[in-house]
Length: 165
Image (cartoon, rainbow, N blue to C red):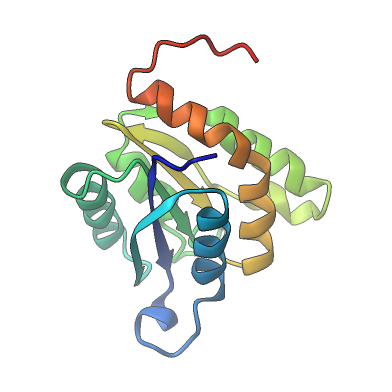
């Protein structure tokens, strides 16, 4: 599916970044993306800090030139949840359909899905997707959009083939 594309997994967790919590969500996402044919180009656990998140997203998109960055964590309504703000700060264009589809599918599982503030967008030639922090929710959300990602990345990079199936 995504064989020619690189992917970074970025986990936001204060405790995880200090080694006080295992990152089950990020590790699981790595397995899912590898199984889908993506090459994992970067993986990191960082604190819930808007500046650190923004700086890392910029580095991975612009310097490491990853095709896809998947974040996990920091998308809720707690005061420390700043991943959407950090993402919005660095993207050139938003892709609301991806986040809307994930929320819609998640709402069928839990009413708490409407509390997600996750966003998705494009920075240069890189697609950035925010996912929830729990392993279960991140897995459910990525499953909703996974099949569309290779085509999205192809189009972001200037691919000219039609979108019709």
